[in-house]
Each structure stands twice: as C-alpha cells, then as structure tokens.
Length: 303
Image 1 (cartoon, rainbow, N blue to C red):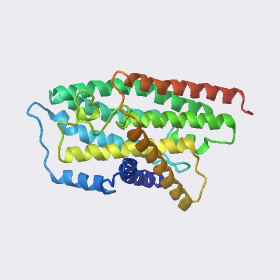
Image 2 (cartoon, rainbow, N blue to C red):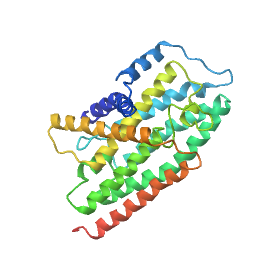
Image 3 (tube, rainbow, N blue to C red):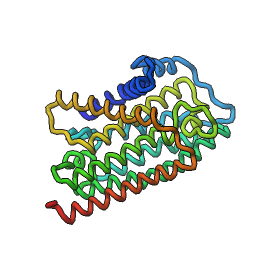
C-alpha cells in the first residue's frame, strides 16, 4: 500500500514539477502548479464527440488504456516496499499489460479513418517495437544479478558498495531515463506541445478524443510517467530510511527527475523522425553494455 501511495503522489506532482522547472529555465512564470488537475476536471465536465466512421473500439480504448496503466502501477514497488501485485515474472506482466493499452490506442487512432491518426499510430507502433528489447535487456540484467524475476524482490536486494554494481546502476538508470522520455512522448523523440503534422506522434493519435476520454488519456499519461520515474529512482538509489525520511527522499528524487526531463526539453531540440530510431536503438546499446557489466559481476563477485 505504501508503494501505491508513493506512485499516486508522484503521478499528481510530477507534471506540475516539470512545467514549473521548464518555465523557470525559459524565464517565465508559467501556469499554476496544479493547472493540469484543473484541466482534467474541466475535461470531465465536457461531452465526448466521436467521428461518424469510428466504432466501439474508439469508445473503449481510453478505458482499457487507463486500466492497463493502473494495473501496471500496482506491479511497481517503491524501494523495499512491495507492490500490491507481486509474483515471479511480474516484470514481463507489467510490460505487456502496458502494451495492451497502447495497442488499443493504436487501434482507436486508425478506427476514425483519419490520416493523422494512422500516421501517428504507425510511428507509435514502430517506436514501441524498438523500445521493448531495450527494456527487457535492462530488466534481464538486473534479474541476472539479483537472481529473481519479481520487481519487489529485485529492487529490495539490488545495490551494494561494489564499483561494478555502481556502474551497473548508472547504466540501467540512464537507460530507463531515456526509455521514459520515449514512452511518455517527451523531447527529443516526441513533443506533446507540437501541432506540426510532419512530426506528430502521440498527439496525432488522440486528435479524435475529447471530453472525458481526453481526461482519461491525461490521467493514464501521468500514471505512466510516475511508473518510469519510480523505476529510475529504484535503480539508482536503494531505500533504507525511516518512512518520513523516505518520503522526503522520494520528493527530492522526483524533483531531480523532473529537473532532468525539463532540462532536456528546454536545451535540446526535438530530433527529426529519421534520427529517432537511432536514438531508441542507442538505449539497446546501453542495455547490452549493462548486460556485459552484469556478466562481469557474476564472474567476479569480489571486485
């Protein structure tokens, strides 16, 4: 239950942190910290409009998407605090339950017969195909070192004072951070603020949604951002603090994660579409390097 509270806390605060830090870098005051919550409430008060060519797939896609995000959230622990859903192999379960929501959103984007929707769906599917091997290699490396395929046991036992483990933590954490930018539609792979059809990916998929459907999409995005943030924090810094200090540490780690995302979005331009596959494949290269370090740790445990 503690892990669930931490993730929900992160899901609500992380968007506001990111906007405020990005506004600070740009020299602007920026919008209110909880403006994203107000916008979500306003969307729930509106009505949904569907294309005349869309089917029931469009109407159920957002519900499946947020349901998959919530179930995935229940599989993620926070440090030594176990997740509500925990078993051997829950890493694979979490990955593919999140993919289920993406698949429905891809179907919904094509269901409306919109040229933009099909374009964004094609790009989203291609990038997910490239991201999946990188994530599995990173997780397989941690599982190989810790000897478990469960998230809760993995992060509870991972860590140590070995130089090799420190290098492994940095590599895996950096790989997960780059995956977070890709999976949450951030710069340099995507830009949630763009409306240029030649570069739209995620935004092109949700053009046909409005009202409560758009609100569910926003909530799902917040939860997914929180999941990736917690995974990155768990990999880099193990938890062994009292609960109140742990809460302060989590808040500081969230601020650092938001700072890193805002720094990239402010000082790095969005990559062209032809360069995005190379960027995502570089995560697989980092994962393979981490796998090599993992083999070194197994072969030389005393180093």
